[in-house]
Image (cartoon, rainbow, N blue to C red; front, side, top):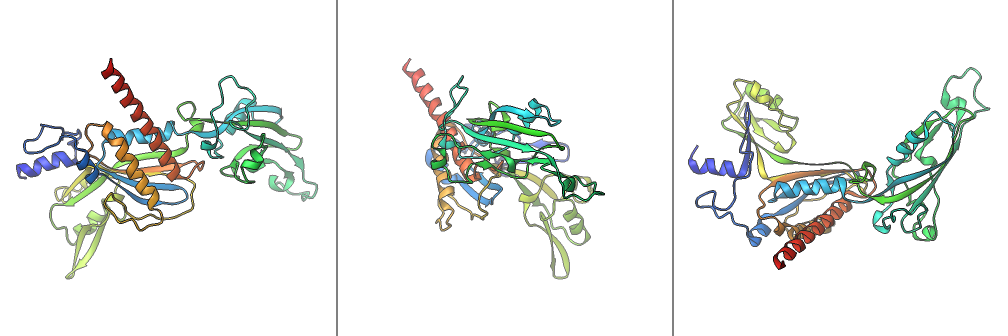
Length: 397
């Protein structure tokens, strides 16, 4: 490999070998490579940075951030997990609980139920405020009593037939409006995200009667306030065939990777392997166990391309690919272009950005995934402003 090619590989690829990983650390800082100008430049960043929204449906959002640093991608993930607010059950007033589930365990289970309510419409409850008001509290009532089914067959042993209300679900939770909340929120908008979450099981004579208060909070205080089930990012896989792989070797190579990564084509009567979609690979490095094939494949990850994945509760739809120079034609372009503009505002706080990352977000259903991402960007921008203000204050001193 020529010296220039080795330098490019060190700068742009994280290489996975049989016994280790090379080029793990970012090395493209100013003055490290002769002939390369790696100083921070706003115009250069704006040309190279882009956000590609790959897929968004009712449960998930996946987009790529290209030309960004790992610190920003990870800060973004951590903000989604811990600093985007939601509404969750904080206080449970138990009037009667004769089920086998102890009061404390029942309250804990209730607190983890995701509540479908926009936290942006509420204020944080003041510390020490026990009652709450319509601007900072949502109230739910759960009152269920199990009875014997008089119409059940005498020889039946099925609890679903023998008992009435023997399973307590989230559908039994009733929203009790406070103040003018009934006028502000249409019926059905304030509810548990899922109506089939099992809370407890009862037997005839047992009863659960309680009142719940939901407040606004963040995951940093308690995991029940976290709006995402998963939020992750990973570097884009880059798989290169160093020489043609034909015949039976092509089929063997296909089996060494995740489905869809390697495709076997018939060319002039020969089976020939080609890399179809490296994005799907999980990098198990199974190919290194094959003595014939391990020398014909290079496994790497693109250093500045992140795949980001998140899941949420929105109407299903698929987005196209967008970049700073794209001609936006999709009806969903507003989210992608706003995301791009927001990151442009955030980026100057970091001295160097050079990463590609796919990001994945999985929401609990409290808010749509595009809203979660937008709220996370606002939090990140606020942190950047506070940091810059601190720097200005130090310089003045």
